[in-house]
Amino acid sequence: MNTITIAPASKGQVAATSNDGQTFLTTQPLLDGARYWLEKGVSADTFIATVWSSGSSHWSLRSTVGQAAKLTVKSDKLGKPVFQRHQE
Image (cartoon, rainbow, N blue to C red; front, side, top):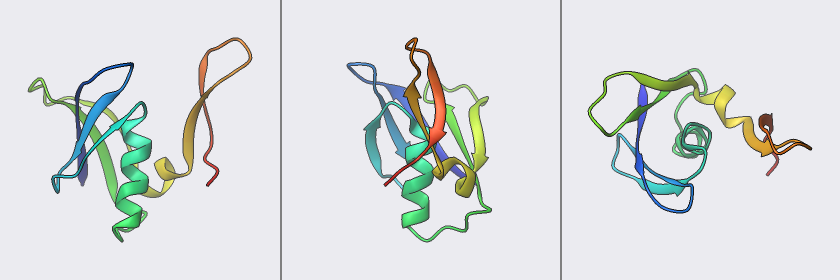
């Protein structure tokens, strides 16, 4: 399993650090992390999870890399965040 550890950052973003040491700023760490792992050649069937840097061992979100990489988060007409298909 690949993990993305998240810590508070600024302006609505989190600092996301992969278990291989790559750090990036994002508002959707699981989804951006999955795309990162796919680019690194990880199998789409590999599990990915986000965990809080505060020491909590609880997963905040988890998925397979392949499924999470297909999604993004956008606001609907009322401003509510919803999952949508990721477009490159």
